[in-house]
Image (cartoon, rainbow, N blue to C red; front, side):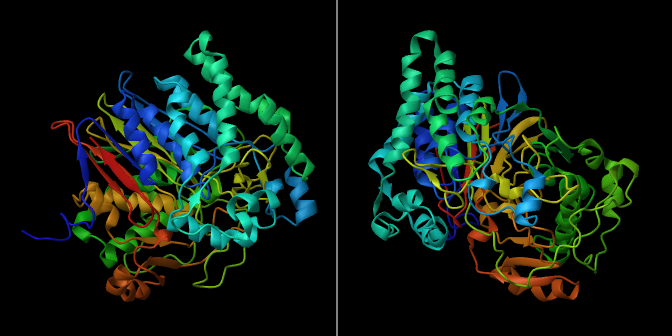
Length: 583
């Protein structure tokens, strides 16, 4: 009997039959499992874990940030999404950033959009959960009020970001109390955030005799239409921001149909093109007819093919993806077999396409289309992207009834000031727009930015099989793609699939301001670079070696479901603080 690793992985795949949670922090996963043990469903558990992540990883996740979700509802046999993405204030405009900031989107309050997180959590709970907000928020509120042991990941992130959040006294008071960033093991308390949660819960309690749904609505309205909204808008406008009370009162997350594509016996569901989620679907449509297994896992031929497919899809993302309420996104055409076949023909087995390819023309076959971003100056080869900071987490849950929950909440505390007294940094997702006329994700009043966080849900033979997601900016879809293929094509367990070495192309403009572009750059963990780096360099890739087990390669969590045995199997990424738990 081999002693180590366990079945091809350094951590065991966590298995159970009653319910499973995998998330970006072990205490959040435990909170979700506690809800399942009390009879809650996957949505109750996912919301509880997600709310805890807003406290435990407040450097990367914010109650006033974003929270996109994708869910499977077993009773209805239906997949739906919750957008959980804020909108530009109605007073914001592209012209302002062109005139006053030379086409840049500066750090601070002017990149803030409407906070979406709390609305999205409450909407999911109200529409698809069974519990009250008080029941699912209690663990999060206690973690904020009483504190938790600072973990090394957050401590390092706060140290790295101290010069940024140090611009604002309200932020420094929380994240560097007494002028010192907390060390690992220090008890980290967020008293203001805890009080804000209690104010929301008090509104729910006051309306409890009106019924569960009305009470949840009252809790949500306390944040978006009550005194909390006034405090947010007054502060942000005093700092020169665009966000108004009217913007907050008008905001609501939406329930939207998912994007879907077939890949052999699998169906891939993602959120819509208001995020980058369809990248995963589009790449798999492009690779659907390739014998990936025959190429060999992480062989030079395999890495080259997957990288070139990603580059083609990122070109389409840059040209077409944006808020479909404002731009015409040819999603159906881009997922068609005809278009995928035409794009696939551009990939040569022994030569990388220089830089990022031209976008296709899905309305008229392959062709090319005008690209407003062209002319962006390439960044220095091998340099760390300016905007590459730790931002975003993930949670997925499955319950004994077959419901599935998948969410990728996000928004750092560092790029805008904390609202004094509330412990909240309002969503800075405006940094993912472009101040470029004609770009699909150009700034416009009430428009949603093109979001990087993108939860996914995989079906197999018509039944839910695997929720998965990851933090990591533009690496998210790339890491999710590799983990999915590790499971679906190469037969790995979820944990082994997550621990396998990863690679990521940077041969496209970054999603975050200042949208840096690294032509031909292919980054990969050192253990993989040592094996295939030279062969890939011969094909024209500029190979950069990441440290092994780097957070830059993402932080994937996933759960698989075996419908014959009833066994759920979960994995969580050791590159970050992720952990899985179940029963």
